[in-house]
Amino acid sequence: MAAILESLLGSCASKLQNIITDEAILILGVEEDLREVLQRVELIQCCRYDAEKRRTKELAVNNWLGQLRDVIYDVDEILDVARCKGSKLLPDDPSSSSSNAAACKGLSVSSCFCNIWSRRDVAVRIRSLNKKIENISKDKIFLTFNSSAQPNESGPTSKLIRSSNLVEPNLVGKEIIHSSRKLVDLVLANKEKKSYKLAVVGTGGVGKTTLAQKVYNDQKIKGSFRMHAWICVSQDYSEVTLLKEVLRNIGVHHEQGETIAELQKKLAETIEGKSFFLVLDDDVWHSNVWTDLLRPAFHETNVGIILVTTRDGQITKRIGVHHTHQVDLMEVEVGWELLWKSMNIEKEKEVHNLRETGIEIVHKCGRLPLAIKVTASALSSRKLTENEWKRYLGRFIGSQSILLDEIEEALYLSYDELPPRLKQCFLYCALYIEDSVIECDEVTWLWIAEGFIEEQQGQLIEDMAEEYYHDLIHQNLL
Image 1 (cartoon, rainbow, N blue to C red):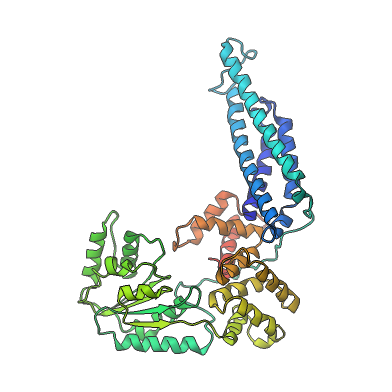
Image 2: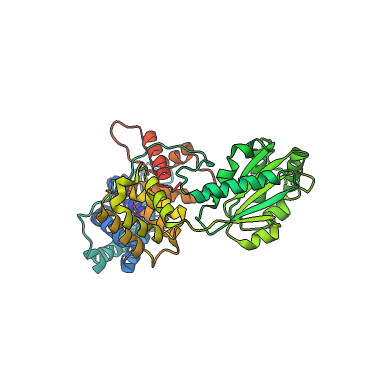
């Protein structure tokens, strides 16, 4: 919420500054009222950073921010209304009821009253909002804020790391190597069977996708099947979109407007008589992804492997999986290794003095690789001192009442570590449908259009936006 307010307050203040001297506002006679609104908004802006820091620990602060957000939205709306109504009263406006002569000259009495009513209506609404903002700025919560607090702008700088969706760095521990070899051998031993199905099962964030990636990218696997496809299956998947994605993966063109039956037929014709290796990833939640949608195409006459990742053991039964591989929680020592390696630290001796605190963090992450990696991203922007890490660990523990589990906790804290300039860009990405590809060129232009990117001297705004994009990738948030 605070990141949204950061943008709203700045946008509102800027809009007020620009509109106060507008002729459309002057004719309404609300200039002084708007100046009061501007003064109070600027006063509140001074305390927004302290409010942001306290909102996760104090419910009253969070409620106060909610009230402020609602009022700022109302201010933004009334500014648009005022400009619109004021423009209609200007003499040279085509829709104006006035003339270049004296006010109301040649107009009916009702028209004059309409003009007066427009002025009064806008003025009353602005004064009402002014009173609300005044009450918010006099609230006892507001009076406790520290106006000298500053945002943390020392967030990570982009390293412009670009990686494939199917490449996983920092693989640690012998278990994943042993498990991947075991699964590769199992796949190769059953590659001549018809639609042999195996599943990688485990809780969210435990490393199912990482293991599946390692199997999928194995050179023996790549050389043993004519067709390969990696499909992400979201909880609310579209049947048409999923079929099109399978076709795209195997290099088949599809037409706009094709039905499910037509796409299934095209898929069946393409893979007929060819061996295939299909991965259904991203925690398959519904067995009918296979039973109703894909099985008609990958029917019993085709030779190949279907690898499914899921946290639901019942899904494997309904799909008819022949072999299930359970992924267990990470060993503590392996988790510690993943933590410092994910911070781009080359040798453990560089952080040996932080080992005890680091192991505490691994336990707080529930020994889940995803939570550990996200936490490492947040720690990488901090000093390598015990005090810094213990302070972070304290915030981790303090957030338990708000967050549901270890992964959400780690993700939230990673988000919370972002400077305000990045938070609003990250939140904007929530507008994308789950499992959508967030293209750099597309989303950065959208950020620019929304006014999220601050221009800096000597740097193009497009380059700044791209830097924001890669900062979010570096933080494991995109």
